[in-house]
Length: 164
Image 1 (cartoon, rainbow, N blue to C red):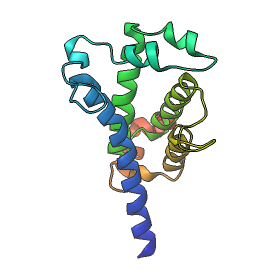
Image 2 (image 1 turned 90 degrees about the horizontal axis):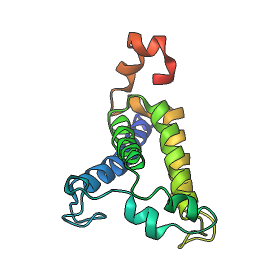
Image 3 (image 1 turned 120 degrees about the vertical axis):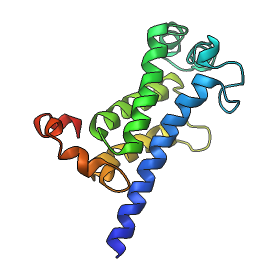
């Protein structure tokens, strides 16, 4: 019974991680007034990455990231990353690619604001969330409260295991 409860906890953690990415996508698309002000969504013609990349980056890589501000390709990569990583974790399918993509996204965000974490001298969510994502992928958390068990038995995933 304890093992079953543990599996549900891993499933809930996976759903939560997926929601973080999916919500970032939804809020930035529509400007729902949370992290993205109302009327400043992607549908309003506002770049979802411009403000952060132009004004919030710090540290040794700031000039590089500022040069990417307003680039439509960067906007599309960021938004599709948020959407697909979020959906993958929510559904529990394709978690291998999603976890590695999420780790890459967090590394990029961490290096964009390359300063010591504000609330802790060395550790924050930009380090812990990638570790969590890799752990969820490694233990196969997509099979609990998700479609991962079905997904990994499809002919496509059997032929291309990277899609697990």
